[in-house]
Length: 208
Image 1 (spheres, rainbow, N blue to C red):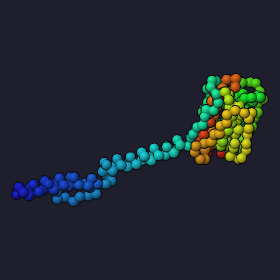
Image 2: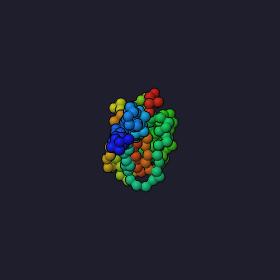
Image 3: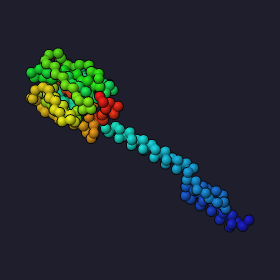
């Protein structure tokens, strides 16, 4: 064999092996076939694309929830209705008030009432939402304790509780097409503070 020819063949082999990674590498003189569907790198790219799509879908789901608060003063025992939301959307409200403050509260999720939090002095007011109606805005006032709450629904209803004095707040969800899903806060003999949690209306409870 001519040494020059042998050297040229080896160089050609190296060129083929450094060529496009989407082509199958063979011995010099053999036909090259497309191997894009079987390339490990292509499989890796496909898996990464699926992973990115999954992460994107999860991000969209996470971005439907938002939070406002806490509004109020310090002190009190912490409470949260995060578990109650599993019973369904908010369907009714019970708010106890006295001459100055929001004393206590209770919320119905689906057909199940949450535990009552707060004190026992004052008048208890109860309001039921219409089927499919949701709270889309909450405003109020506070000074040391919660003094006023106003729930505004997607049906245009305005549901006020308490006295119109103190520092004002106004809470709306961060993302469109989301509603008040549950509340949290702190309480003792009065409602010290409140937090508002927003998310999408549960589709399985369209008749709640």
